Image 1 (spheres, rainbow, N blue to C red):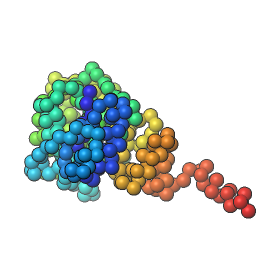
Image 2 (image 1 turned 60 degrees about the vertical axis):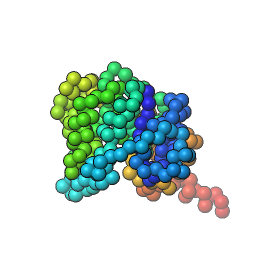
Image 3 (image 1 turned 30 degrees about the vertical axis):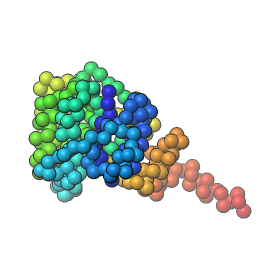
Image 4 (image 1 turned 45 degrees about the vertical axis):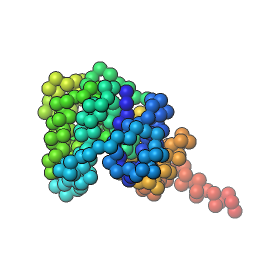
Length: 262
């Protein structure tokens, strides 16, 4: 089992920690597809770094408008091209993760071809950017037809990596029946609980944590990682850092301190 990601310099502070977590739980280096790391950054990483050239037509650094409100979503359309290159050079199963992920324990799942993460959406939520979370995807084999289809969709103007693979899988996958392994044109697709295998809420039950949006902003991320290493509740800490919220206990202590210090 290999752990694979892709990154440029803007996520260097994240991939340093991701690489450490891979070494800790898998006893081997992270594999990184180089999308724009500096020479100094590459030298400082415990990783196998692979150069890759992505066609300009793919526009993987761009954004797409998917919602009626005109919200921008990052395209990240490099992913199928990295997977194709990986299986041209490696035979081991792999987990493709975003650069702002972190392993909280070893994960190695079998009995399927491709695994994706999914959380049933709230009734009020529209999944303009696809129904799955593409920040963590398991590949136990090359899944050549799926990856090729994914790459073709990623070349289109108004899409993202996540919307593209969601749309393709939705041809046969019944997302309401997500707890069972399902079939996509001969491939066994397993659907994992996103709150555990792609935990964007940073809970202690998450096996793979995902520091999405402002959670991976360098100043916030470094504070969260510092507290994570101490075993602290980083979900609560993020709430305080980003939203200015404090726990009831902390607010009470702050109110009582001046009284007892008189």
